[in-house]
Length: 546
Image (cartoon, rainbow, N blue to C red):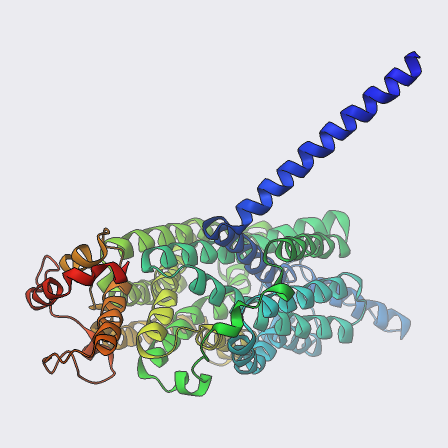
């Protein structure tokens, strides 16, 4: 009897626990159907994907050059030749690639070229695939391309872990570029699509940029330590596991193959039309120019540190790590400023480019590791200002001037980054070899400072502001940002058409399609008297605006 009673008690206890688990699962499913909760989870998924992509991009810096040097030595020993001494664990970061430090490192020039091509292959393939991936994302939505990107990144990480020759590693690096073209573009586009209000969108994209920065700056020491104590495979297997977990979370929350909301979405503007938009072209150029110092210094600065200030290996390995904190600070400052003064986004970007230019010019004057930290932090702080201000501006430009589908416009942003990082490993070393490290930094600084005034072209777009008085009258809500002005104009136009009212408007209201025509004349308090008068005549039917 006691045995039967014990077994029945265990059965009841198991049934209660299963019932509780079922209730919690149901609550979780209900919470995930809430749009607010769902977009937060989507932000986490996208941020993890961006973190993984940038960690995989930089984690090979301390691993692959040393590993390839070992392979070359083994081949030399088999051929009966004298093995050459390996470079440091941060050999490529020390500038050994591209012919800038092969003699100092004792590595053959052929290996230097191989390392440079290997590092650039990811950005080059990403540059080639992005025009196609942007169009694909606009047509099928954001979720399936993100899943494709995560899957390809997982495969490339596993190939990196088990690859044992140059051809296999080159294939893995190129495959990562293919995955990044889908994951990065669709992830940023998904954030812009889910966070429609400008302040929320800037905050969400700022969080994504913080994860990108964290992945890029932490990956080299992460990979170097694990490679030193656990071998080549462990860092890549850890990243592969995180990628797999992120993919499962994505499938659980979004269920991309059962989502049919894309069928009701409008067709996006073709990418070639976005590329010739002067405002988008200015933003894309700024994103490329501001990232050139980082892309060109990564493969050259450590070798310069060794030759001029006799830095130790740990100093060269941790060169960029302190810059993570000013980058996050720059993201935070820009998000807060954009929330208070959204009409000055162009100014934040221009200020960031000036800071990048000044910091880049001061790098060659540094004589110690402590002095070098300051300009590198300035470069990353400026990049944070530019990226955080201009990435939301791309979505805003699409909303104002085109169709609110964001795959192609963020493919253009990804192309801008890829141009800088494709040239960096290949071009930077040659510039240092032919002209010198000082001339490289002065040139990069001058280009950034000279490009900053071009962002004045965005001034008319960024000056668009909502009419707070009309929004309060029609929507009975607090002001939310720039998009209210656009939505009110669209709603008024639709209402006028439906009710067949003929109203006389000034030239500024029926002007061209450009952003200047959409700008609303307001006073310093955001009040528009003419629109307030029109809102009084529409007050009786104000319910349809809610």
